[in-house]
Image 1 (cartoon, protein in one colour):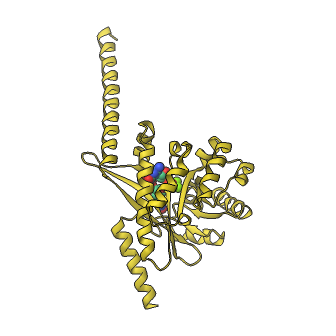
Image 2: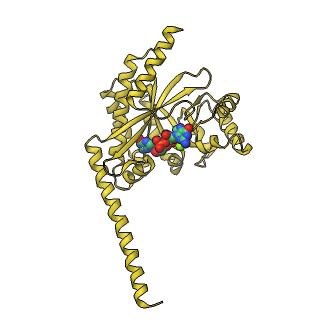
Image 3: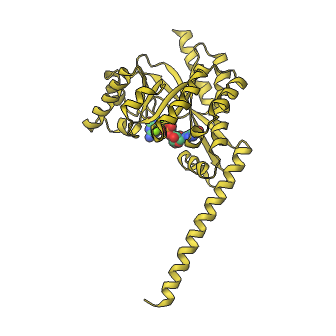
Length: 284
Ligand code: C2E
Ligand code: MG
Ligand code: MG
Ligand code: MG
């Protein structure tokens, strides 16, 4: 191999590295712009009772339609936000938008619903998260008990002692706490019983394979038993088939979320769903 070739390769590598960094920086700056110009939107995915099929709440999920690149996956822009120091603004925007929206909906609905909001790592570790939540609640019509904060198991277990004190301050406001992606974060059972939690959300990876792989069904069953022992509610994520729903019902899982029931919906689609439900009730 000649020296020239080696050099050529080196240049190409540098150039592609450079291009990668440039793209990343451009995306960061676009996201910063999107956040300050209300270019993000929220979708709401129904969470239903497996006992009677009723809607019990929704999870707010952020969406970013980039003007040039089209839709960007939430895991990607949440990641960019974390690295660019924008996750606090992102979470704050989501919390405020979702709380205001659910406050308005609950004024109109016969039975109030709860809204779940995902809290990112940085936001959770921020010492004044409870102050931010309190301020948002006072700005919206939403009652605290109808706001659920979803915190991933991994983030909680990074520092269980710190997590306990943050969660206690949040619980003092009257909000609900759910552990997101449960089963993937190696929780210590001892710590789990010391945390003021309300709900475990079983990670989609266990639900997806629970019919073909007995081990996954066994894990789901164990989580449901654990939750019952600790007096926590359970929501199964990513339920896509009627077979999965039936198996979960047999295991006494109370709540589920997934494409079988509904995809994440726009505000307009949610309002159409509310209207359908109201007219069903009138007909019944
Ligand atoms: P997550 O909090 O576990 O949210 C559930 C994800 O599973 C959502 O993906 C939802 O669309 C998807 N999902 C729901 N049901 C099904 C199903 O039946 N099948 C399949 N295949 N998927 C299903 P999404 O919206 O792409 O969000 C991915 C992740 O990005 C979320 O996982 C959450 O960790 C993060 N995320 C989304 N929105 C926000 C946000 O507003 N703030 C923060 N901090 N993170 C967010
Ligand atoms: Mg979530
Ligand atoms: Mg989840
Ligand atoms: Mg998940």
